[in-house]
Length: 360
Ligand SMILES: Cc1ncc(COP(=O)(O)O)c(C=O)c1O
Image: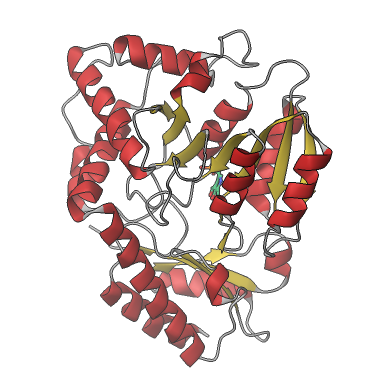
């Protein structure tokens, strides 16, 4: 089979046993066998978030946006307001969801690729006491910046706000502790740091909050979080036909993580990122972010000015390595992104650097 190394932030290279799991014999999603699979998935995903027994999770057939949209379109009553913290493309995506569903929000925005200032957030919370929920992306993939999940969690706890954290590109790559960080809702996907395929979206939530919702509150059908919750706890089922084979693969990927150990996986990602970043510096390339703000799995790099970004990406790809062009203003700044998620090991990073050196 053709081997292509994906140094892009999803889809990712998968382990052989995850790929094989896709070929599981066919089952009906209303069978007992599916129910056992789904119950296991819901339980295993809780471990990725270090959740305790007050949390539950559901798996939705869809991409990361479906998990985020499921939360934001299901939890607000008429007149409820949110506070949105954003500093990149995926924070902007949350804004788009809120706008689309007509949910009012306080906009606490920062320049793309700059740090969130918790003092500014706290001031906005104080000035807007009616805000019900604070929303933020943890790892803002568009720059690779890590946002202050615990500082904002502290504010959410102190002011008694619900707290929604998009962990789509963070879970499995960064330490996420929903209990310590007062997180009410956290989302992720199979096809990034968890090492499975696109098409499975996970919502982990405080059970008492979702129990208190009702299906009419949601301005949605397919993404109705209360319906997903109800079906899961009553029947270990999903409300609609799920991506069964994708779920088998996710299950295997989660088993792999639990076997390797979540902390070990996070350390492996950090080790790979360090190898890549040291190599980039040795090649004289500049990085967008200072070390302390960078995630363990994404590095944003300036391509030398005399190099064309499109040509560079095509050349890397024809050498078997996929990297990602920066988005919007980062594209204009000739930035590309290197991700180390999924089946990537130190030796792959060293091979990557050799190919990179040839192409810059
Ligand atoms: C932090 C974050 N949130 C949301 C999304 C949207 O996910 P999707 O493209 O799978 O819908 C992404 C995708 O990369 C992401 O990185």
